[in-house]
Image (cartoon, rainbow, N blue to C red; front, top):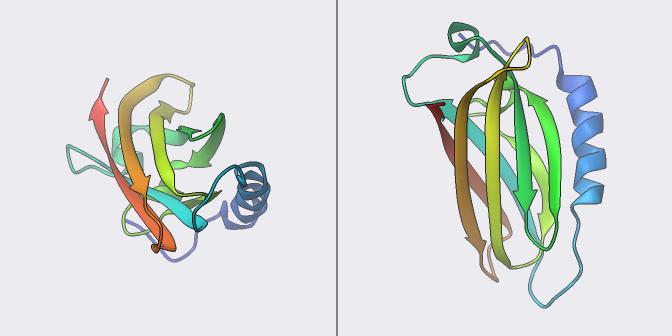
Length: 129
């Protein structure tokens, strides 16, 4: 069950701010888009029930960047900010990782950021690896 209190919030906010700076691109025409990611598990369980502690996310637009987030921080309906991107295709690959570092679930998706849309949210479904 999710609660309003999330212990990683302060460190996550600082990390996401740094990540957003790393992922800001100015390499082409088009409006910038704020891009966020949320996830859930295909079997309907939550992070604790699946044994997932963290989610490692690799985002590829004009270059690839990888970051880790606490599992609970991206569960629907919450999401984690991934940065600001120019219009174009953004691909995401993610692994849901146990506390011992073992990948348990995987997910991937892509979104085509089109001019005129200021924000985008990709909802990722994790499947058992």
